[in-house]
Image 1 (spheres, helix red, strand yellow):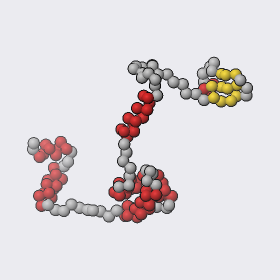
Image 2 (cartoon, rainbow, N blue to C red):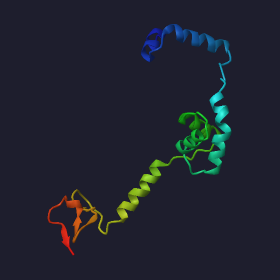
Image 3 (cartoon, helix red, strand yellow):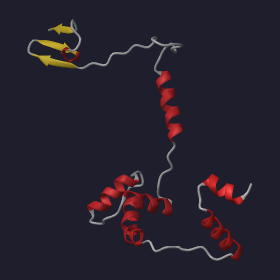
Image 4 (cartoon, rainbow, N blue to C red):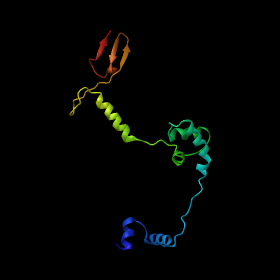
Length: 145
């Protein structure tokens, strides 16, 4: 594929692509690493909170860091925790499968189609001499005492 067509396909100016190629051929060192003053300033406090409460996520640690007087963003806290290996791995699929398994175990006979599981969620409120079920939203569900 011609270079002009390739750079048009990936959406990069040809001049930039040629400059990148020339830099790669001369093996110039990459730029960076850049200074990270926000991370360096917040690292001790974020690490302290993360080690005190390992179950906390980055948002709670961010809130506690802000409460202690450091202006830092949530993303910076998350990056610090990832760099130090202090963030818990999220296992969304495993948790979802466990919840689904528990939901299915609640039925004596497993439903095989729609409209086979009916449930009612209601609350009872005391109203003078009677109990009003479902907060007066369903007529006829009033129990006299």
